[in-house]
Amino acid sequence: MLAARGLSSSSLRTARPASVASRSSVRSAVRPARLSRSMVARASAEKFDTGYEQKFGNAWILHGGLAMWSAVVCTPIVPLVNYQGEPLGIAFMHSIFRLMDQFPTGPKIDDPFWLQLIVWHFGLFTVLTLGTIGVQGKKQNYW
Image (cartoon, rainbow, N blue to C red; front, top):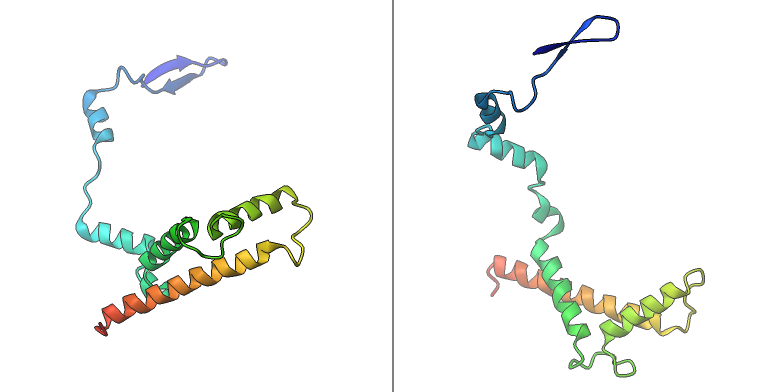
């Protein structure tokens, strides 16, 4: 510690500059602490909910089902409710963007957005339900 004079002639203690600090103190500050396996297991159990699959099901079903359904409805080859030459997913996104441009006013009751919304979500929930049935059936050795 170096001493410095304050305004009222009192001495203030200041820390050494980093260039003056000893190498051993720098090494000890940089070196990570060693953790035992039980400490890591306890910390991970506190951070992550281990009963997630029991409460909500397998997360791979949700992510895989959403990705697969999005790929299917955005592919122009699949003839799912084709709107003016566009697949369902792309037509649904175009109608969402169109409605965002008209923001203060909502969609009318006869807007094609409602049919696209219902068909898209019905298909998504069907894929998720069938995926859950498939995973649970495989887990319980039905097939």
